[in-house]
Amino acid sequence: MPLYDVEHFIPLTEEQQSSLAIAFTKLHATRFKTPKFFVNVRYSNVSSQAVYRGGRKVEYNRVILRTRVGEQRAKDLYDEHCRDIVAIWEKNIGRGGVEGLRAVWVLGALTTAVENGIARP
Image 1 (cartoon, rainbow, N blue to C red):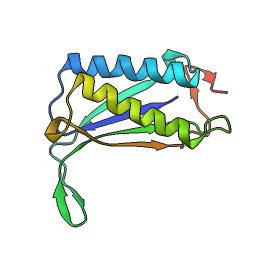
Image 2: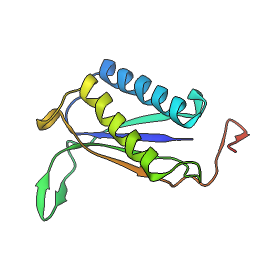
Image 3: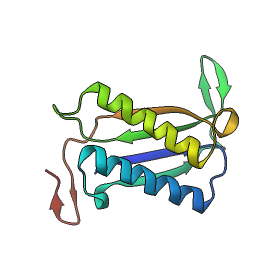
Image 4: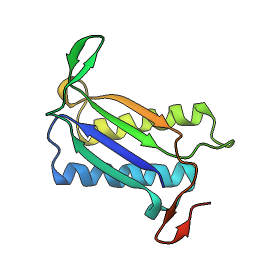
């Protein structure tokens, strides 16, 4: 079950969250041939968290995708997927500055899962 963790330090309205969730789900289902009901999108407002990079405090928005890796999924495919996630963000939220999406990470962490009694192939 793919999980898109959207970590944002700017406020996102329910409408913005819904727009992103619909677009991420459609993108994932189309590209990876995954049924839409398996795709999860979770939002975490991280504005109260302290993040340091290179010893300096930073604030940025990022998306972390946890999904299954496979022999049919080459790095180029994931690179394209990341660029498409950025494009979706820019269309729905904004580009650059505080509204921009700083990072998209893809973690191939899903070995297996059972959801609603169904084992994921």
